[in-house]
Length: 365
Ligand code: EPS
Image (cartoon, rainbow, N blue to C red; front, side, top):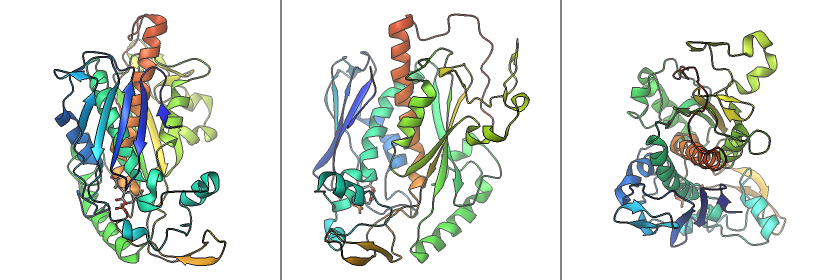
């Protein structure tokens, strides 16, 4: 399955070391202004080689719009986007082509298909997420025209957590970290990690503000269920929380409920979703990403013949994939939201609230 969404449908294709990667967006509303340069900012945010703390592969990530846009506006027909791969170094993968990296998808791909493209991780590479971000740019544009802003930040790196929060600083450092004072400590942490040849996990939070009440389906296709599936579908994601997430297990009803007054909700434990439908409050999602499996520290495994091997992965790998995951998670949230908005419009005839509502409020960490 390489297609995502119901009315706003995105199909991605391509491998990390193939000639190109791309996507087709079907069902996109007409009239959205889109130019190749619109993709640049988010693709840069996600790209490798933009700081010393990520993979040093250098891809231009220039989007070619092949169809679905005329005179700078979407036409309602399928939008095909293409990015050519230019900096593949497939010899890095020669030694591990017939070995299974512990914790890597290559073991499961091999057993499922009996064949795989090992170069750069092939289809299981984080390179695929480039096209999710590209499709997310179109979704974000449509959402922004309706007052919906989707943005995220790194909320944990290993065992380090933010000691302050300011949206304005998130984009000023290579980690998407919301507290400037801690950035030097993160840099030191990453340098030591790189030297050790190991990798580390991370957590990313995404917030969608301005979502009106009513988006989401009541039983199957709940907004939170689709967000969880979309976010879990990002490579390396092992956990998703909506609102207070797993913390609700230890809560009392009196602590967890978000009381409602004429001035608004008094809290947002629910993460902006009630009964699978947006409440008008900020939507809060959080993902946990596992440590990169491609590491230099030797690990025991098998090769495709079943012989024991010590796997050592060299090459240009991210010591923490979470550092580049913020724009990817934002894109997945935006794709779910546009799809649910269009579904709501199809059934209910508008994308805003029908009944009077209380103010949704803003996000506070
Ligand atoms: C990746 C391994 C590296 C990363 C790649 C993701 O690929 P390579 O060994 O070819 O340099 O650079 O990330 C990207 C190319 C990208 O655009 O995100 C992996 O195994 O997932």
